[in-house]
Image (cartoon, rainbow, N blue to C red; front, side, top):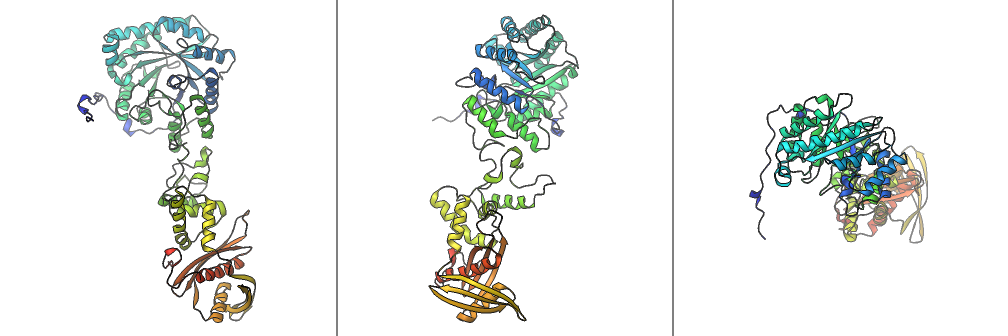
Amino acid sequence: MARFDHRKYKPAARVTGFNRTWPEREITRAPIWVSEDLRDGNQALLEPMTVEQKQKMWRLLVDIGVKEVMIGFPSASQPDYDFVRWLIEEDQIPADVTIAALTQSRDELIDKTFEALAGVDKAIIHLYNSTSTIQRERVFEMDQDGIIDIAVAGVTRVKENAEARPGVHWRLEYSPESFSQTETDFSVRICEAVMDIWQPSPDDRIIFNLPNTVEQVGPHHHADQIEYFCQHIKNRDSAIVSVHTHNDRGGALAAAELAMLAGAERVEGCLLGNGERTGNMDIVVLAMNLYSMGVDPELDLSDPDAIIKVVHECTGIPLHPRHPWVGELVYTAFSGSHQDAIRKSLRKQGDDEPWQVAYLAIDPRDIGRDYQAVIRVNSQSGKGGMAFLLERDYGINLPRWMMLALAPHVQTASEASASELSSSRIHDLLFENFCRAAPMALVDYNVTRSVDGQQLSVTLTDRGERLTLTGVGNGVMSAFVNAWNTYTGQNVAVADYSEHALSAGSDADAIAFVHLKKDTLRIPAVAEDSDTVSASIKAIVGALNLAGELDDNEMLGGLGALAE
C-alpha cells in the first residue's frame, strides 16, 4: 500500500492586515443559539425525519430554550413545507421563538419560501450562495462580480417579497457559503453589497452567517477570519455576526468558541453534534463548556437523558459513551488513582464553595446524574474505588490497612470475571475474606469498671465447648486481649482498630475493624453487630478464627506486614 503523499495538500494562508485581539478575551455570556437539527441535521440522515419526528424534535428544542430554529428548506422539500405549515397553522411557535427558513438565491425558491411562511408573525429568511474560489472557478465559472450579482439579485427578491407582506417582522440572514474557503476581503465585500440592498439598522440588524462549511483550517485561523470580518464590515452595529462550524477536522467546537472570542454573537449547530459528514457544532457541548466556566448558557440542560432519548428517536444515531459532558461513562473513573482523588475531593467539597473535585469538571448532579456511576471498579482500579463504593452504598469507611488487605481479593475477582465489580460484590468479598463467626463465636459479655480500668467477662463457644474468660484493660478490646492471653498463654496484640456506626437501612447498626498481631501474623478482620462494643469483640474473635486457618508463615492475602 502506497504511503500518503502529503505534498498534494498545502496549508491555508493566514489572514493578515488586522490587529488580532481575540486571544486576550474571555467569553462572558451565551451566544444566540440557533438549532440546525431540522435542516443540516435532517439532510445528513440516511432516513430523513418524518413530520412526526420533526414535531418531536421541535418540542425538545423549545423545551430546552432554543430561541432561533432553522426549520428546513420548504421550497425544496415537501416534508419541510408541510412541517412549516403545521408550525404556523397549529400555532406551535412560542412568542419568544423565531423560525428561519433556508433558500438559495433563486427567484422561484425565494417566492415559495415566503408562500410556505404565510401567516407567520416573524421569521428569518436565510439566503445563501457559494463564494469560495473553488466554487467560483470550478462550479459556477464566474468572477467575484458575478457571484456578487447572484447575492444582490437574491436579497432584492427577498426584500420585494417582504415588502409585499407587511405586518410581519422579516429578518434577513445572509451566508457567503464556504466563508472559510473564501478570501476574507471578498466576504466583506459581498456582505456589504447585501447590506446596501437590505438597509439594516442598529434596531433591526441583518445577520451575517459565516460558515466553516468544510473545515479545512484550524480554529485559530477561523477566529482570525471572523475577527477580520468584524473589524472591516461597515455599519458593524447594524449586523449580527453568526458562525456555522463543521467538524471535518474535529475542531467545530473549538472554532465556535474562538469565533465568539473574535466577535461572533450567534452560533448555529445541532444537538449532540449531528450533521453533514463528521457533524455540525454540538450545541449541548458548547453550552456545557460555558456552564463549566461559570457562564449561564441560557439553555436548560438539566435532563440530558431526555435530550439523548429524543435525538436518538428522531435521528436513529446512538450516543457514544464517551461523548463530552453527557456520555454514559463521562463521570466514571476506573483508574485507581483517579478514584482515590475523587473520593478525597468529594469529602472536602463544601456546599458553599466553588466546585473543586479532581477529575470531575462539574458536579454530575447539575445535569441529572448522580454519583452512582462516578466510580466503578474493574481490574484497573485501586483501593480508593472499592472504598468509595462501600462508603456510598453501605456507609462503611474502610481504614487504610483494610483497603490494602481487601484490594488483592477485589483485583483477583475482577480479573476472573473480566468485568467491573458491583458494590454488592465488593461487600461480599470483604466479609467472605475477613469475617469469621466460627469455629469460635461470641455468646455474651459483661463489662464493669475497676480500679485497674475495665473488667471484662466474656463467654465464648469453641466447637461446641463453652468457656468464660476474664481480663482487665484500659478498654474492652485490651481487656479481651488480656483475657485471651492469660487463658491461652499466647502473645496476641491489637495493632490497630476502627469502629463506627452504620447508616440507617443497614442490616447492622455498627461495624468494627481490627488489625490483630499474633506472633508473625498480621490479621485484618471485620464484624458487624448492634453496637460498636459487640462488633469490636466479634472482630477480634473473627481475627483469631482467621489465624487458626493459617500456618505460622502465611500472611493473609499474601500482604505481609500491614501495620503502618
